[in-house]
Image (tube, rainbow, N blue to C red; front, side, top):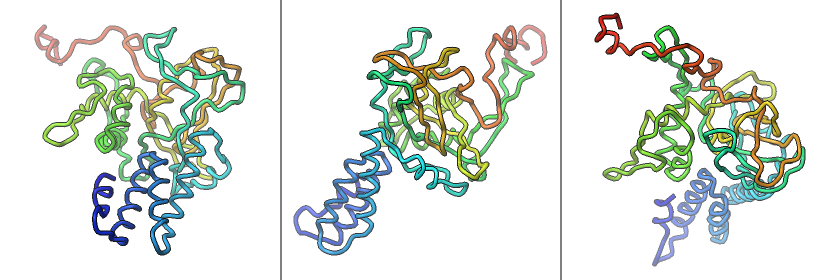
Length: 309
């Protein structure tokens, strides 16, 4: 987007060059979720002489996304009709203003809280995946994970999603910084994307742990059994309870959370205990040391004590 803006004519008008720059800037803004900027660049292009059908289409889409973002009103039937096994990703805006992220009263982590009074049935949140991969895509790569602390246990990991998330964090440092704030078991560089010698540097292991702890299974595509996995930012803060006040629906890579009972302003939002994040497409619940008993010695510790690694 920066390159497109920089290429606009400053002194001598060049309508052809400006037209290309405006559409590039508008499309880049749309891809980053900056729909107001996409509207602005589309209108600037439409003000130039000639026909600009691409700008008219982009303007219509961007205005529709702004309406969703501000109102929380979605045409669910149209969304379902727009996706398929060949096109599983939803073109929709995020609706987040009914929620805030705060320290949770009942856990040591942060949680999702209502930003206003909500009634049963109200839409609490709508969010598209920060990144997703789907079966039969080249990016869908599974691998077996073995941890020396649990030598008898293996788990499948969605390493394809990990790679896609890493690239997304580097491509969009602002949203990437918000993703790096998500809980994980490793945090060295913090929540900021670091720039070294003009390049975005990300702690790959930190991203791996965030993906492992916060990945959701995706599906809900009408007429298709296609499945995927994705990671979300705001909705990942939703904690779980045996007495939930919200429920989650997934359509493609769109998460919708609705209130199942009245929720007061500043009250924490909870999903049911069966709606937890799943770390990969195939594995079940995450394992803890409570599940497997005492932590076995590492290979180095075993050798030092005369055992076998």
